[in-house]
Structures are given as C-alpha cells and as structure tokens.
Image (cartoon, rainbow, N blue to C red; front, side, top):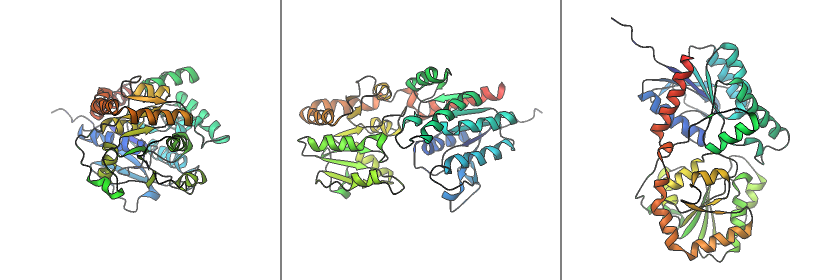
Length: 374
C-alpha cells in the first residue's frame, strides 16, 4: 500500500494575522488561507500576539501561531515578522510566504536555513508621505533586498512588475488581488447616517496623505454639488493631518470613521452616486476592487495603477492631482447622470478572471509547489 502523500505545509507571515481583517493583506490571508485549506494544504499563519486576546491553535482549519513584537509605531510589524521567520525556519514548513516589502531583509534568514520563500511586495512604500527620510530609505533598501533574498517575487499588477524591473532589474510574477462582487445590496443600512441612495459621493480608505482625501474634499467643496461627501475610514492613532480634515466644518461633509459592519460598508458603496479613488502608490487596490464589485461609478486619480485597474477609462473617469480638476470632475459627473449609470451597469464586468479569488489561489498554489520542487 502506497504511503499517503505528504501535505504541503505553508507558513504565512507579515500581516496582523488570522482571522483579523483590518487591511488588504489581512483580507488576502483570510481569502487565500481558507481556500488553500480546502485544497488540502496545511496553512500556518503567524498572528501578532498583542492583537489577540483569545489564542486558539486552529481556526477554520488554519494553524495560528502567536508571535510577539516590539510594540512601537515603526518597529511592531518588522519585529513581528523577524520573530515569525525565526520560528518558521526552525519548523517543518515547506514554503514560507511573506507579505510586505519592508520584510525584504528577513529573506536572508530563510536563505541561510534553505527554506523556499515567496514575498508579495505590494506598493511603492518608499514614496508614501508617512515614510519620510530614514523610513523612505529603509523601504527602498528593503524592497531591493527582497529581490535578492527571496526565491519568488510576487507583484499584484503589471505596472508594479514594470517598476521592479526598472528599479531593481528583477522580474516578478503578477498575481492580482481578489474581489468579492455583490449585487442587489439593500439601502436600509445607509439610513443610519440619514443618507439617500445616490444622494452622496464616497471616499473609502485610511486618512493618510497618500490617499489624497484632503485634495478630494477641497475640490468637492469648491464644486456646486448639493450632494454629501461621505468619508469612510480613519487612522488607528492620534494624527494631526487626519484631525485637521475631521475638524472641517461643512454640512456637505460626513465622516463616518471606521465602518466595520460588512453590510453597512456594502450599502455605502452600492448606493453612492460616485466613488472617489485617490490612492496614489499601490498596485491592485482592494478599495477599488470593492467599488467595481459593488457596481460603483468611479472617479480615480490619474495614475498608471488606476489606469490599469479601470482599463484605461472603460470603467471610470480620471482626475489630476489638483483641486480644480476635482471640482471639474464633480460637476461633470453631476451633469452626466446617464454616464454615471452606464459606469454602474458595467462595473462588475471589470472584475476579469485575474481578480477572482479562486483563480488567485490556484496561481499561489502553483508558485508554492514549484518552489518545493526546485
């Protein structure tokens, strides 16, 4: 009788953990991890211990290891991955999958142990306004180190692959981020904020400079729109830039803070007149995928990444990075309701196969198996 085939063991680290869903990486780990378990893979996720009061060893078939970190704004994430990497290298996992290019240098540890690795490097972290000076230099260096120490670099957009080829002379595999489209979302949850269907425009994202909420708000307030501008999101720490925005006094502005109820968030997306996407430095952006999946008319900052996601204008209009351009696009959108409706009707067709979570999982599985065989 043949011996049973050994299960592939994959360790995943670099995010907050599972089933903690707060940002894009946490969502990816949840969607990918649960699907890999169904396919017979042993999945181990390294959780940031401080975020978990309860620490079960297995959740939905995923093994959870709770590793510590040095708790500070700039060191938490990096030290958590460092301790996780040491633990994984001394274990029997077959492949280590890391997210976030800031963890690039830790690939040296796995290389010394001979553990196969892949890293999803995400966006242009070194350009983000929050990483000024030393932080920016570190992320650029760390991203470069990722291309030297990891066996497989993964980017989530063709444009980001081009950037890595140009800057670091390193090719990468493009595996996009998945989407979960939903149709026919009822409007009842938005009544919580006294909103009417299509009576508002929407921003969703962290209140940080690189998402350009300040620019969108300024341009919107210059416009003659009678609708509200709803800003969903916040920052998890005290921040002068975010506070300045939240203290703006205008009856057309509504700051909801974080919206953690998925049905409320789905309703806010589904019933907006248009969704603003001001994200500047990422590749495939989860908030944009949600907007397409919920059938939004999209107004996006003109970047190569947003051009790629909206298929060069098929699924939305673009604005330039200045308040006047914002004012113009708001007034143009209000003057052309038929075009906004057309964008809504075709939005979900923008979610081509590459944004399907099952397809994304298949691609990751191919990478993991190829690393084990090499």
